[in-house]
Image 1 (cartoon, helix red, strand yellow):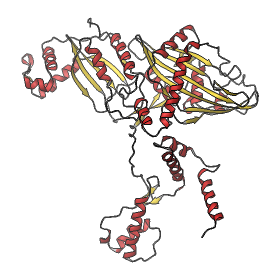
Image 2 (cartoon, one colour; image 1 turned 60 degrees about the vertical axis):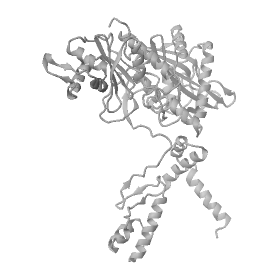
Image 3 (tube, one colour; image 1 turned 90 degrees about the vertical axis):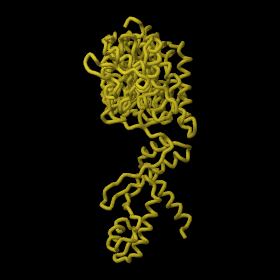
Length: 573
């Protein structure tokens, strides 16, 4: 029987192997943060992730149901690669006993134990059940809309490899939204309740060398795509973004920010950033925390994005302070053109706090004195704290937070974008003729008003809404009617069956429109602008439906603005 000393020595060795000073715990940390459930479930996931790095791959074999019917040589060849111990010339009974032990062992092994086949080749782990909805598969898209940050690779949902798609406009505000979500870590592998360490040396490397008076080793920079702190500081200090001059701390910037804050939709938050740095002036440590919040806004025909970066710090001698040390806090407001496209026409910024001229990457920032926005900004911060707590909860709160603001939540009754678009058009006299969904999710509605038809399309993956003349779509419908025997005759003698059976199958409005097309009573609809825009304010990895509390109001404002710009809400089209 081992002594208490031996037992404790073994436990200490195990502890050192699991969490010793030289151990890389990144995989365990990610497993803990992403696991669903209470502390026990999260702790178990972290331990499993750490053990998965230590365990040795095992050979797994498939055992036939009637294994006893195999001849002894066949049984030996089957069992031996996975046997723990087997003598050179075993009996058939010994081989069957070993097969039983192998079966029991394989059944009890967890999925995270790596597996090899009998030839030593890796085999995939079996799938396990999960109480959380599986995330949709994703595909990369390189966004070059913000050259000041470099090329940003974002992930879009991918329901089908060859799906019809409405692509985002290159350099448009849809790409801006996806890029900002990515570089500020609002999307990605970390949840809002996580903590992400940002690189102190990379942050210091942004300070110009002629300003960096303290002795330092060669600066080690990081691209914005690899560190949210670097990305945030570039957004706070660059003179241009998307090669558009940034209007800084002007009266126009204050007005734009105030409008965006008042009309903002649902806010989504990044994980908490943590910067552990050393103040060169007084040689004390500074632990800064910061977070980014992003929302879309829409007001009186205009729309865009707003980002708010805020935080605080612990100074080694000054104590707790309400600004994040060596990081800026600021509001960044991006405005979309009102011409029916995704063109970004204004970029405005208000700096709320600056690290000071000896650290600021552009030599210091003016004090904006934006006290009138304090109440709104405080509500954004406190709501983020509540979202953080909800994301940590293992029960209903976490599920509700994911359903309203996340990408993997499930909603029993999701609100469809095209339904709301049709509702607005219905109030202007447009009547729905047909509705179709392409493989991969692209939705299309054919509508009519008077002598005009229009198609309205929505891509839930790229969140694009497009309006087109619908005469070509109605023309294509004629072929389907002919295939169904509803369109008969040829040439000038073609007629549409409008009987009761045909109306039940196709609808009276569609049949009437088809007949009017044959008789030349449908004219081309001239859209007043190239009408395709991104519906802003939705999680870029979600299913494209309206889930958030403010999502419907925000969507209807953007859709109404698009329809007005296209000229299809008035009677003059």
